[in-house]
Image (cartoon, rainbow, N blue to C red; front, side):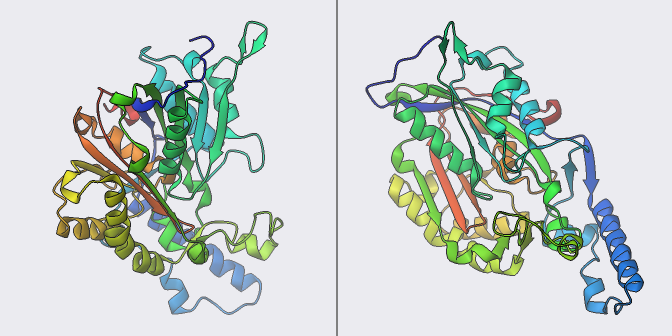
Length: 389
């Protein structure tokens, strides 16, 4: 592409290509139940060896689950786990390579790499954006001159991908970038506490890649008014990792054994707060800002935290006039956090026909929410996971 001067007028943004990758290793609900039983036996043995009281019946119940329970209360049938030694970077890299495999678009033209993730490959450094730039061969020199390449790893819990899409739009609209590789990937299996049934039955791994390109303002898929975000740190304790961060960087052996360096969630609180919020004031405010109404939405994709929870939100939207199509992963891949929305879209390429008015809705820890509304104005090249297109 060569050196691209900064634009002096606003640019639009389109999504040119989308790809997804999921690991081959399938964990169905029966396998998750077996792993929880193993954890219960390990904990019981640890208590016996330490002379502690055995597990109470209530404590033992927290390790009991099965296919019927998970399908009823969570909605997932299976999920994928990455192989040992694979990180978030590997998942994102495989998705990005699938995106560029057709030859329609080239890594050499990319001038920014944005990674949405809550499970960085390395805790402090290097950033996944830099790893992807190098492995994809995105050039760093133009002859003797260093080529400008923007990059960032962005984390906003389960809102990360839509928040990153918002950043991509801001960079392109301002003229500071023209071709952005947006990777949404998470190895959520690394965050599982096997003593916490609520999360152990939910999380899965996946990587996605989306190519965001500059276009004329007249062909813009979005507008500044079609992005909406929300943040309320008063609910920070509802989804958190208690130890292991910079505030408590050295977990004790007991904390490690208890899984306190893994994610923990107050599921009832999430449902109590987020369902009415997403189902009512959040969507109403975002649509009003954009000048849209609920019947304007032809297609929606929500972060797939829990299909049962999402069904409650969608029921509230239906009461408000939503009659469009829902793109989801059907409970086959679990909660893949930063990959969940683009993964769902990759499974429904026919839903992304030009003229389709869509809404992308991320929500989760923080508490946080990030929304993007837009209209498909160009064909988009879609490659689904494991060759599904």
